[in-house]
Image (cartoon, rainbow, N blue to C red; front, side, top):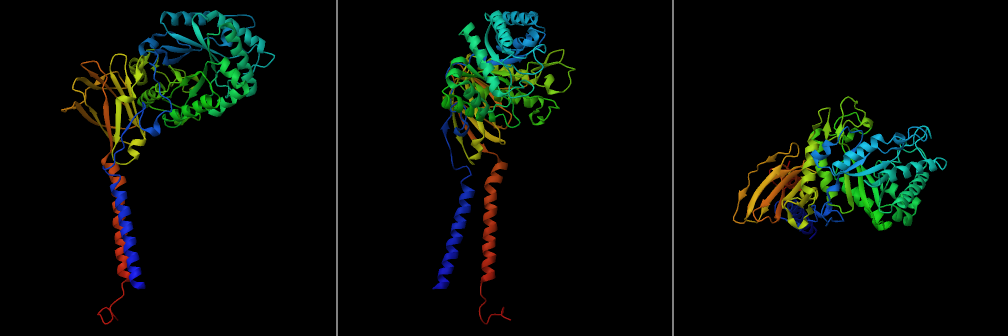
Length: 512
């Protein structure tokens, strides 16, 4: 009886092991589907908690502009919002009561002729008033006088003002953070007193720490913060994948809108990626020219989907030559470079995004996504669908994990054009798609470099796209064949172990 029980136990154990390994082998194979409708990006794991429903305003596309000899490039790439550096206190009042508005006047006049929306940066105490990068209670009256004169002089054209830059960095603010919040509060109160319709933007931290903003609101007082500030400034520089923008935005929005009931918007007043080094201790930021363009596409796709982000301002417009490679001279971030003002791939990418997204709408119902095979094949995909102002369905697709196969199906007979955009030179790439009885079908693969497609119909109606994701052969080998190898190894082990434990028959030739 004991022997039979032991044999039965071994058989049951073997059957369980076989069933488990077979399940591990079969399930990731092309048998399970995970259909879901997106909310502007796919899948649910990567969706923003909020969805932009209004049209994307042209001023969403901003640029940082400082010491620029002209502004032709803003027209070339379609930038409609610009963060101006020409209003710094140290530039306007280089000596006590000696004001020089020549440069600022010229910049504003040029921007007005180009219909460029401006917001100004108020910062930089002159050396004659303090050797430090801070405003004390003693120097506060002089600071407020500068703010008063500057805002009143340009208020007819400059409708938004950002108070200071990255006060979490010693190079910009050497005093206590509590003192900064007091100075910022007094400054915002003054601007609102001049004209309550002016937009006041709080200072952005260098490394987008939600705890920094939480402390700022606490020092200011939530009621006063909501009353005085129309927008919160945010800077986003990443050593890691750009997709973390979404995670950071989620954290900031939870803190501001849920914890503090903030009723304003977010202004990303700096975001960018350098293309050459050295970049101090930030070498992990460095991208090549094509990677910089890729990250720009992702940046504007992610932030355009978030309704709280009012503007995203790329850092930087133009890289002059001959300034060295120190990141503080800003020669490595630009959409243009050199005395000839040649457009980098990122400039072409910016132009593509501004031309297609301005005036457009996020169109989440335009995509239905199905994942076939391993669940991981869908968790890292980012899919965005935009209805452009020119009746084009604009798709932005990438996967930040590995290469995956996708199949796009459009069940509409009146598709007149289906093409892919080059991110790096504004050319349109023809693609080979198949006509089906229902519409068209196209197969390709996506990786960390975005694929951007345009679809037009004869009727001018927007299309609805079905996207099927599946693992590549290499991934199937990795995720599906390995369990089979494990099964064979265990089966071999069990067989060998059974042979070793088998008792010899008495009287057989195998007995010594």
